[in-house]
Image (cartoon, rainbow, N blue to C red; front, top):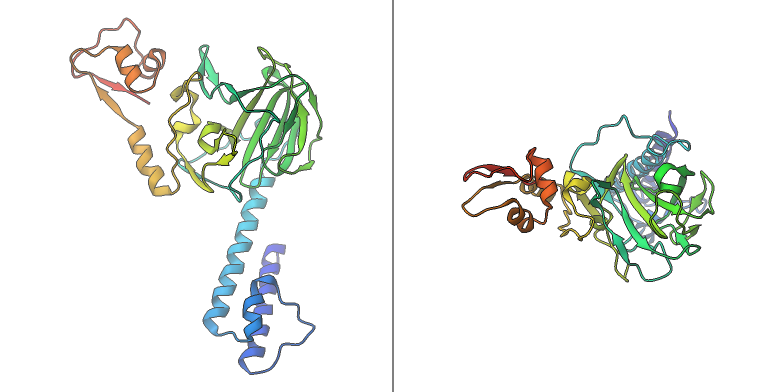
Amino acid sequence: MNSSLYQFTAKALFLFLFCSYNLIGQKAPDSLVVPPTLNKINKEKKLDVSELSALIDTLHFEQETLDTINKLMEEYWANNTFNPYSDTFLKFPFNISFSDTVYASPIDRKKVVTSRYGWRWGRPHHGIDIDLISGDNVRAILDGKVRYVRYHGGHGRTVVIRHENGLETVYAHLSKQLVKENDTVVKGQIIGKGGVTGNARGSHLHLEVRYQGKSINPEYLFDFNKENNIRSKELWVTKKWTNPLKHRSTRRSRVTVYTTEEEAILGKEAESTVYIIRKGDTLWKIARMHQLSVNQLCRLNSIKKTSKLRIGQRIVLN
């Protein structure tokens, strides 16, 4: 019997014995230590079959949650690879859960985002850049376990932390790394010092948020304001928020958070929009209307800036 099944069976057996004592009017022995889940019911000294069933379901759910956390934390764990998920398939939309409503600021000064998630200089920018001075403290934004502490190409000195919900946060361009691989860290803990290592143009923190290898626009999950708000304890992520091509690094994308799968599915359908060319339309006008760049429109539709538009022509917007 595996350990998870054993723990659940033991808990269920305890509940059965505890229920039996109450149902037959006998007091539970003093040696029985009642878990927190039963504190309220223990005071009343009564349990019926439906309550027992509900408690077993609760314990089962809690065990399944722990199993899910362990799976997300342990699967594809690799200290020598920046992205160990290269051969995995991620189904959209997917769910991200948070146990808290706030994160810890990654820096000790006011957060100024100098470059956003999106298309930049003809290539994807998979994170956001936050201004700092070399030597400033860099902190973990959530509790987690350090998976990767290396020098990684254009990222320079990098720390990657995996969190219980499966997210990984990437802290790049550091001058110093102050944690080791497999360390457990808490939210707000100093993990490094800011710098300009790698392909950095001036000192800043490059912060990425990834899930199973896919980068997510950090501003979909976190509001980079002074309150350090997590946008929702339950979020559903569509392809739009994992594709830099659909965002501009010079402008904050308009955020509509999907808190249920149904909202995400409807949102996904709305995101897959097509524009029909009308009289007087130009690529520049269409791009401005839909918060895109002309280059993005051209790439999405395999056309050139000089291509002639026809009335009735369909233009893909994402």
